[in-house]
Length: 204
Image (tube, rainbow, N blue to C red; front, side, top):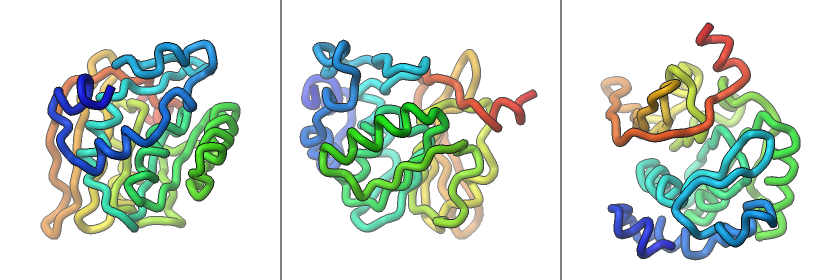
């Protein structure tokens, strides 16, 4: 999976590739989907949510430029797989999931795979986690139609926000807080489940 589907498509960070090789993706998908766990595609995980395709997990992890010891926020825990990869990079990971059943199953899977220190929070991640801010990286795995200002506000200097933005058509964006303000760029077109909760209210 890592060599053919991720490294071959341009994910080159050796630490990210090593993390992807170490985290058992099949342990973060429902039993009925485990035979497909290492294919390069999203898979259903229940509650109308999906686990992102391996390439996207690798790309977002690389774009976040996470270093050991840094504090990272993930919005949209899902199965817990992306959080496990971030933890494998040595980060202090806080992850928020709005669906209680998914939060609990991710918490259990992370604990069973040795990532018990990942802080799984049940709630709406639109406003981030101000009590633990600032964050060196924020990774968002569900798409709002705009970039939530609270997430930008919680970036540390030099911190990066990696987020899919859009409704029908989505773009993966990277925003970085610099000494002169926040600068951003668009990476690729993507397809994520929509961000729910407050994000939907803000778009109406």
